[in-house]
Image (tube, rainbow, N blue to C red; front, side, top):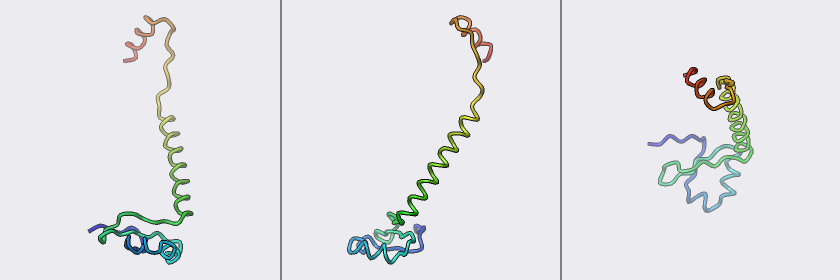
Length: 92
């Protein structure tokens, strides 16, 4: 049996009949949309979705910054190809 991750649920048939009534009855809470008594989608208020997207973008920026900060410092190599190859061999 699937766990429903919302305080309210509605059948997909009910949602099709009157989506505005479902949204209004939810009172700003998330609603699980069920198909054959299994959750197939979640209906969330626009403000909740926008907050989730803002949080995701801020976390992605933090993850990228952590990744960049974790990169090793670049080694400076000489300009001619033979010296570069020798320096790289010495690093390995």
